[in-house]
Image 1 (tube, rainbow, N blue to C red):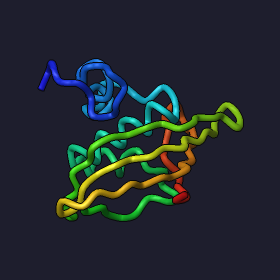
Image 2: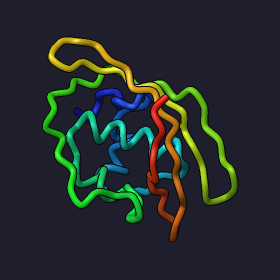
Image 3: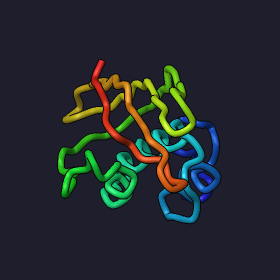
Length: 125
């Protein structure tokens, strides 16, 4: 897996992209980086990372990724900062459930607290 491309679509190798975020050795430097790492966590069924990077005010008590989703791609449509500690990412994620294709288009909100970016919430488009 060391030489494989990161699932987030950055074109970088996993170990040079989302890998250090998922293993806890680095923190996301921006809302876009956190969005990419969270997508990668969905691909890898890493529920712990998803919960850790979800803001406590909106985070569920638990998360079970039991639906057999095969994630295919992530496209970041836009990224913006409303101020130094709040940002948003508009993305489209594509996948398969039971062999049927779907897309999830969302505008996600992120907040920076104590040097850590967190996912707050998202609105489906």
